Amino acid sequence: MTGTKCNIKLCSKQKMGHESETTNEEYVGSFIDRGSKRYLSYNRVMPEGQKVDCLISFEHNKLTLTQKGDIQSKLEFAPGARTRNAYNTPMGMMTIVVHTKRLVIEQKDTEINLLIDYDLEAGGEPINTVIEIKATL
Image 1: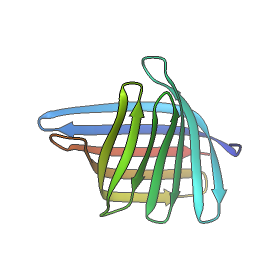
Image 2 (image 1 turned 180 degrees about the vertical axis):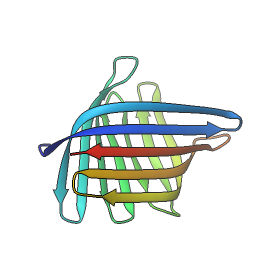
Image 3 (image 1 turned 90 degrees about the vertical axis):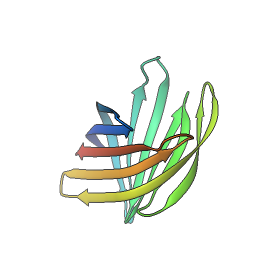
């Protein structure tokens, strides 16, 4: 996917019970504006060496995160919605329920800010996750 080159910073904060973890990642990717729908794409390498192509598509009040490669998933986020999503890893397929509590999409001239606040339910206690994405064009 071609488009405008951009720098993408992701900060993910996960909390389950008394445990919490924060990860920060940076990528060089592409931004495409197709009117009502916009896209950020980037490639990442997992700690185990797995290669994953990532695509974030977003429009007013809806965002989808798609991963293709050694990990395949499509997670859909819409405020107040509970979605069932397939997550396929080398160890097998999982069904993940996502309850989106808040979704913020802001676009300025050369900057895009996305915030996703959701609970991830995959059996057991939900994992509260907040992802902040900042793309600089």
